[in-house]
Image 1 (tube, rainbow, N blue to C red):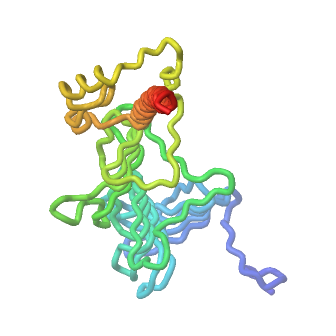
Image 2 (image 1 turned 180 degrees about the vertical axis):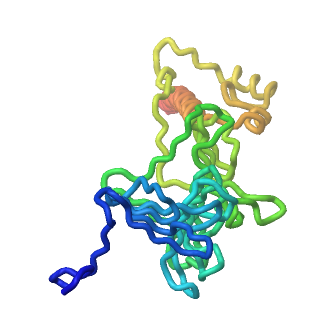
Amino acid sequence: MAYPFNVYDNLILQAGVQGKDILFVTGSTPKERLVVKSDGNVGIGTASPIAPLDIATSTNTFGLKIGDAAKSNIRIAGTADGAEGYGLIQTFTNGTTAGGNLVLQRDGSGKVGIGLPQPRYVLHTVAYNNSGAAAALLWGQQYGVMIGVESTSSNYYALNVASSVSPLGSGVTNEGAKSLLCVRADGNVGIGTLNPGTYKLAVEGTVGARRIKVTQQTSWADFVFHENYQLPSLQELEAYIQQHKHLPDVPTAKEVQENGIDIGNMNATLLQKVEELTLYIIQLNKKNEALEKRVAEMEKQKN
């Protein structure tokens, strides 16, 4: 078997001089299209490849295409700059229309899009017709999802779950997007509101729960049963009610309307009133027993 074939019938391409390159040149004005360097690096569109395979392209030109022109394929760009919509890595819905399932944007921001051709956020995913499954699953055997924000200011948010949102992130109604759950950078959480204020948890609406436990109460109402507690007389209590139209230590209707109530403190106050009422009942019972005893003695004397 004669050269350029070896004894195994393999085709051999070899530079004429040791240490030289193999060039593939085409065009009416001859231009190097592919080069195999003496060190083994292969260059397409470049005569000086810096990697085992180096594909160089001009702006907005994809360096690698996989797939039939009429079907879905993936294209990888060869430059780091270019117009929005040209991804470093980008799938196509067909051979010519950008907008497939994955985009790594190359407009200088490094945006990644899944399900749309022009992502607006660093990570932008869109899932159409996913009525039978969630849009994303972020699963970890030991740890789940971590969402972080550098600031601790109340002007920023670590998380905002919203409804009435378009695939591009804007509101779809005149009212705009509606916040369902937010976690502000200062740690305050809002449900149904973007403004939890000074509350660690603010809920715009009704809360339903099987149990609510309030901890770290500074005081409880057992002091009512201490010997040094001054229980107001019923006459004093009556006078207070006639003047103020509410029980002592109990907030007025106006105060509740303006400031709301602290559940823990309010329960302690109500317990205080129950304990005071218990003492009043005990006092009245003693007086009733004494009166019944006197009546019984008077009846006995008559007989």
